[in-house]
Image (cartoon, rainbow, N blue to C red; front, side, top):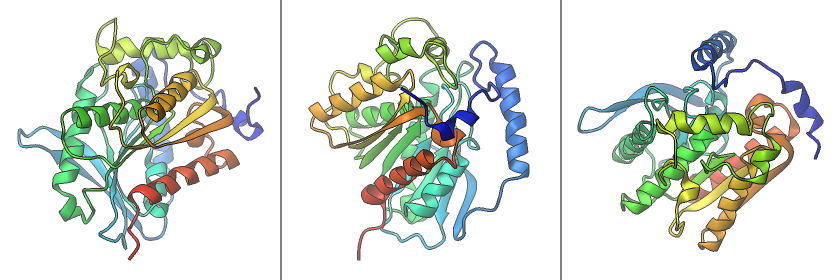
Amino acid sequence: MALDPELLPFLGGPNTADMDDIAGSRALADALTAQILAARPAPPDGVIFHDDVATDALDNSVPIRIYRRRDLPPSAGPLLFLHGGAFVFGDLEIEHERCLFYAATAGCLVVAVDYRLAPEFPYPAGLDDCALALNWLVEHSEELGVDSRRICVGGASAGGSLAAGLVLWNRDHDLGPVTAQMLIYPVLDDRGTTISMAAFEVYDPWDGERSRKMWPLYLGHDGEAPVYAAPSRAADLRGSPTTFLMSCEEDPLRDEELAFAQRLLYAGVSVELHHYRGTYHGFDVLATEAAVSRRALSEQSLFLQRTIGPLAP
């Protein structure tokens, strides 16, 4: 295997995911974010966004950010999007450009969720926040001008785990249909026994060593993860919605993702699998101008267009 040459220059950057120094990693990420915000360009023409708060009847709340085109037709569906960050890092800013791209090109409303992070708030706090946001989205769909019967739940990395877990929870508790799920190099299995996990034990920008340290922080304990925390543990995937699943060749999570896609197919689920040769975890965020990154983002957008984009007149 060989990395795409366009991706090589983006390796070896600041370590904002040191599982042994969470406070230091967060501080470094905040400093980098401040630099990005100071130079951030205006949104694409016709796209707007604003911050809001999703609440429930018990006054629980979670911050959200809503992206949309000004001319979004009412037949469009919404995407609930969950950021990555190993369950302990990340915020609304790290996926801001991706969400803008979806809103500009896919013809859907995007609701990004700033869920609570471990280890301060271990499982199921983050998943509970995402479920709250999903319920809020359904309840406010008319106000938002979108079709609540056509919802996609998506996320990247740890956000992909939260997305898949939320979809399973929604299915098992009969909380209404989700049309599609979009899982971008998702974290799915706490057991860490795959060939790819061993092959990329120490690797940049993500590796098996950090994956193993991540799970006890997220769960709040050592030992096995519940099904909704580690969706690969689900015994039955039947009834899952149409799925977009993206994997990277040089990623410790690769094999658990490919196995999950195969199990979905065996369960009768329609799956669109995108496996990118010569790529590493998070490449489409770290190297946004590389040709393979532009292709990956375009294919994500096309999936959204097909599943929740505006209906033809």
